[in-house]
Image (cartoon, rainbow, N blue to C red; front, side):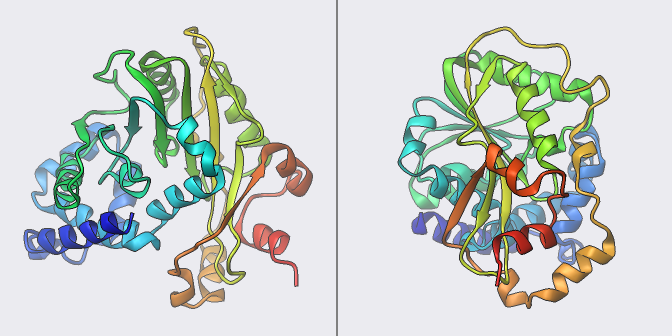
Length: 323
């Protein structure tokens, strides 16, 4: 894994020299914010029109989203590896598809080779290939839109959807997404979904998502599905949600939770003031620390701990770090 992080750092240095000066001031959160409010077609158009912005996005992904494991995207994969332990190789095995692979984070952090990944943005895929070249690994990357039919047949034993489902804003896109997952997976294959902090408001909502996944041909593992949080420093709290499921049938449903459901409906109602308070309570060096230990709180334990509480920083911090 350390070799992959070093390869990311070398790639970032190479990309930096190709970014037009007018995009140097664009931030990681700003670009992600632009993508979130746009449809996939308009997001693609944005990067096609603004040549070089994709390279800035890739550079920031490497230096902030990865950042030797300190970035949220890399930390999420490290957390997944940590809480699944030896079971990871059983769940993620055989032919693996990485949905929304970006710069190849899942393969890189987990030291996988010869997995297939796809992403909407060619600049990220080009960066993933360059990282692999420096790291002397070979994975396969395809440009595709997760809200359309995926360009794959049923050839996969495992599908990992890391930090992507919360971008599905329309019911038709959610249905297309999970029908595609079912279609490309062998029966008995594994599905891993991770969702970022803030994408799920309550334990009940996570339960609803798990039930909806089951309506698309899967059986969720309640012991391995729930909330993952860091355990190494009370001043800095990382958390995410994960769902582990097995495909049990080819049959899929016609609705995900409700006819007008989109994942944006489940976002935590955190105000700008609350976000500011959270940022001010920890110094920057602590917020950017690398977490090294994690814990999985299963869905049944989440019901006991949180009941109907909103899953926001003050609630989780007070619950997990009692003086």
